[in-house]
Amino acid sequence: MNNDPNIADLSLAIKAELALQAAVKKVIEAHRHAGEPLVIWRNGRIVRLAPDQAVPPHVALP
Image 1 (cartoon, rainbow, N blue to C red):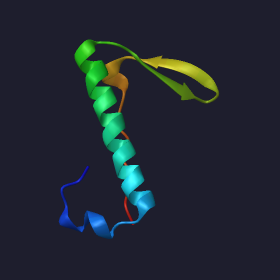
Image 2: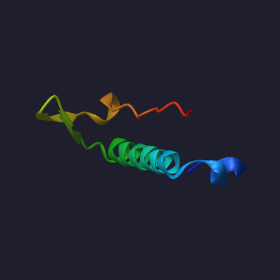
Image 3: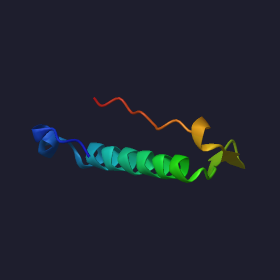
């Protein structure tokens, strides 16, 4: 997660979102390293993405 000293002041929902973003980023990096496709759910279907097609999520914090 973020090393910002004000992290304790964030809501639990924001902390959870930051943790989820960090986890997704790690998974994408691991798949890139291994050269394995990522399997995601998109528009009601299972989709296989090449690791270089995956973009880590970005959420704007309030």
